[in-house]
Length: 259
Image 1 (tube, rainbow, N blue to C red):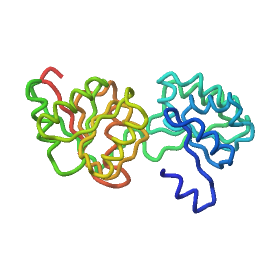
Image 2: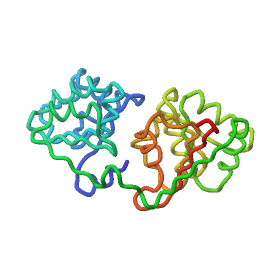
Image 3: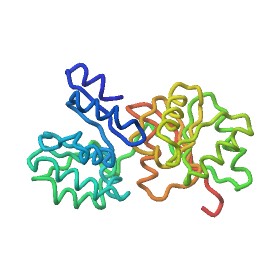
Image 4: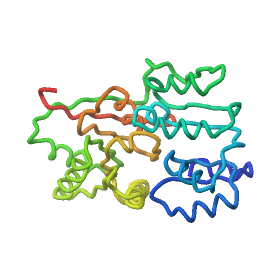
């Protein structure tokens, strides 16, 4: 969605390829040709194996959220795809946090690699304010309902899929209309929830870390860590859904006294 209008201006034909969407439609679109394909590894491999997509003349390969791809077990698929592209193609790895197994991809697939950073790893976002609320467990839902009742968009992060669905139900009992997105939701369900949130029809989105990366929703001025993130990287990516592109935002962590 972000690249299509830019591509249109430059007469660059874009196509999105991902699982959970009709395969036949994607095959037909590839047969009509595309200059720029944005894909998830699994679906792209499927299309390659079906003979619907040929990577042998690709000029540029961009691996977005490169560290996440490596951390989440996508590395074998990513390697298979990179092996299908010309060794001299330009390869770029992007992420707000680059570490871990990414070093293996750099070693094996990049020629004379150069690192570029917009900011240092220690830099902070001056337009983002961080707060922690220490509350007892029995008050948690009541506090969240109070926060969710505000007129602006609120994005809440929880640790588990079940926890996301449970919180949506609990908030609805307090009169708050919330949507959930997580790995057990179909692609259509996730898209409908995101669309409703983006349009302001639902002002609260409850998500697992599936939404912590790569999803841009305008005008999110509050991110709530309902459950603490697993590590500092998850905190960074979750929090990065607010205060984007110069806008301001607040990040709130709900903590039990023992945390």
